[in-house]
Length: 77
Image (tube, rainbow, N blue to C red; front, side):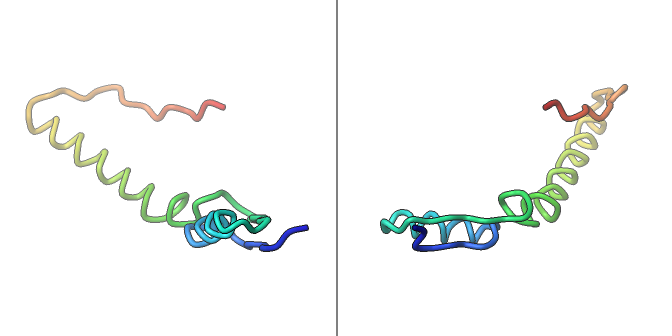
């Protein structure tokens, strides 16, 4: 029997499920999407990564490093 049912695996949901389990409750975590929530998967975190990589490219170019033939690598699963 489940004592605690947490709906949503965003940051708060994951922490709530972990805390309930730490306290000894039989815990279930249910989500319809990816763990981590929108911010980690579709929002600010991927955008920050893209911005940082672009800034890194600009820094290399301004230092005289030639960046050519850069391609997106397909996800490997």
